[in-house]
Length: 336
Image 1: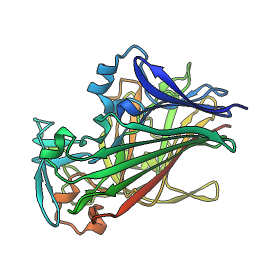
Image 2: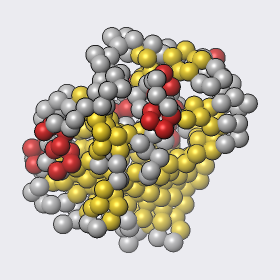
Image 3: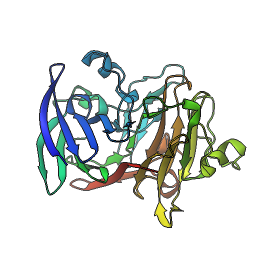
Image 4: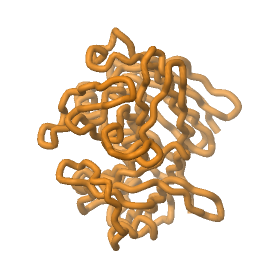
């Protein structure tokens, strides 16, 4: 089996190609340390949405809807306001019809490759982004931080983590998510209507017309329960911001916190596990007809800094100067 980590040219930009056993992946620092592609080549499983025809500029214009992007700050901020314990920041309105600021800026930056190597049947890529006075957004949000990414590809799939460190003298709000774009179907000749998803959802958060939480929990209905039974078809109909608490359930006799996507024809699965720092799910599929869907795990609720809720309910938290926080995820195929 091959294990390698090689720097390569991708349309004039440097990427890292990882290989480990039946898996390959391409890490794109130019696109916010995105996992641009990931495949199980032995079983014809193509995990993430990808379009070879897109130029670099076209990818940068829509970095949320390709590959595996990491967002800071996650989801929407009402009226562009981000309140912290020691300040109030006003982000530009990026969704005019809702008057909200959407998805932050980390995934839109060109990151740096720190190292790429293989060792002990593991292929590793590390990247980073230093946010400081050199970033054009710093005038709006003058709180410096460092983001460090690690991608470890093994025979057991992709192990991913990201560490955010507050390098400022202010409080750094912390709210991170992955806008994970999973193919439906995820095989070359698969039928989208034979794709199913199971998600470890808990209580549902209803949203208002601006896609902001009302903070009134509602009972799960038949639509919601399809996520728990693994019977939800994630494409070919509209899923527009189904929002829930994230829970841990038993799967195959072991604790599981994440999503399982199944191709009914083969029984093969994509399994996507997240750690306990991820408190919420947002499910979305961009209208349902584009061949992909997004099970998005997030550490905080939509508009968490502005919600009238304690942090243990909204997920809002801050990193004090010098403090760091790391989240972990695992993505792999489970073959029938």
